[in-house]
Amino acid sequence: MNKVSESPNNSNRALLASSLCLHVGLIGATALAVGLLRWFDGDPRLPWSPLVALFGGLLAVASFRRGFAALEQAECESAVATDASSESTLRVLQSDRTRREGAVVPYSAAAER
Image (tube, rainbow, N blue to C red):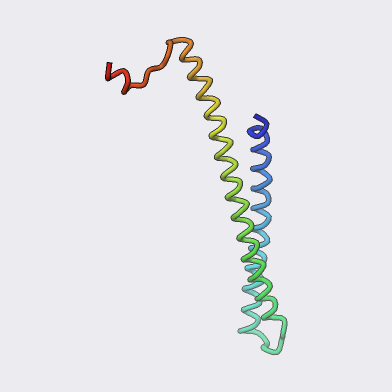
């Protein structure tokens, strides 16, 4: 039960990590664009333009991969928490129904009788 109560907190942390990584990836993509524009449109004697483009591209790829991995992790944890809570709710409802109506017989078994 502790895992279910901690899951929203872990899910929020994963979403925050994903958000931060995606923002850093956007900064990297912007650096890539600026580096390429300065390299092809600006002064070709400036040696920093290809370096900025390379660094921005690497930063964008690494950050986007990490951000989407964190987002997947949050989705998985959310699905597990939802399944666990729905299973416990279903058990409570079924036990309550069993107490009121007696044993529940599946439709296929009832039709064979």
